[in-house]
Length: 112
Image 1 (cartoon, rainbow, N blue to C red):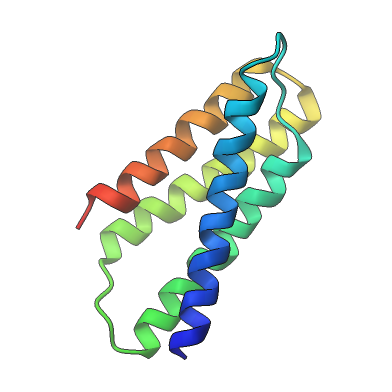
Image 2 (image 1 turned 135 degrees about the vertical axis):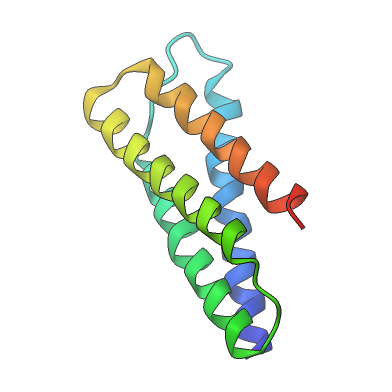
């Protein structure tokens, strides 16, 4: 079960890296847009985050429910914003995805 938890953790970090890496890469251009990779990465974040919670509970490791609720809300907002931005091609959604992803990282690291 511990190995599964680490697999979820690695893929959770891959999802975050894809989101933030894409944001930073597109900031170099003139017209940054929300791409399909952002939606895919957000879904990866949601699925692996749920898997991390499940494995931590299975291993009787501590889980801060309030933190997980905030992270879930942020991940759902990121996915919905990425979906809307992908369909409408508006710049506000690109910046919203980047800001929400950064906020999710701050919550993950700073809330102990």
